[in-house]
Length: 165
Length: 211
Image (cartoon, rainbow over all chains, first blue to last red; front, top):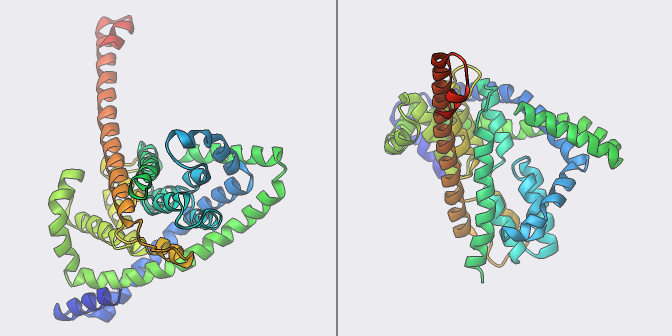
């Protein structure tokens, strides 16, 4: 990080950019960005809050658990498949509980880590970008993004089996 | 997104009533706004700082340099785009790759804004957002920190798995995007052919459907 800052500032000085002014100008644009995405984030947190607290997320992960062995994943990581696209902090919290009960270097712990590292908070990303651009008709965005996540989860089970056996 | 929202909310409320979790639900609703604001404050602060820094990089011409390198790949994926959009996409991907997710967001937003056309997502926008939703990260720092604090023997031994996994899932996501684009085009053509022949036959839609 310090190296990156040094490179950028030095490049600015060499190119005779007014670094101070340019920084302020960029920061101003940043404020605009933050204000535009705030309503979307509030809505999304509202949705996630209701989904998690109502017990609906537990029902869905319970319903999905028989498929776990089918796709080569340990039962314990199934809630992560549902949590991960919805909430980054929720998924991280769940990862911590998995690590505590199974051990960080166990098969389950490793699969959970790879799942977490190779996927993204899909719903959040989609709503931030489309919220900012004013897009309402998302067409095939969400199905395709979820296909990507699902592929990551299955591959995670497969790869950990391959690498650590 | 709209339908998904409705279904999930209704399903959750019904579940809460059946499982008698309504008190928790009320608490979560009241808390959600506060959590969103807290989240925005921490993430927003980083966005503002990175936006400032990245504007300096932009002015110094660093971004243009990087985007010239990635240009051939991007043109293949997205089709023709103007150079400022191309720079935004490059910087977004580069920041994501370096694990600077919050720095990537402003670039991504500006790229999506410049690709926007009305309230319907275009093929290029979808592809871009889908690429963003499949993480391409060289070094997942938070994850490594959590594994280290849980006293893993070697917190980074899963990195090769994560890299391969990311590439596989990214490929799957991009391919599914391309398939959807083709399928939509194909069905549109089918539909047009159908209506056309129906008009010609004058009466039955059976003939039209067969084409």
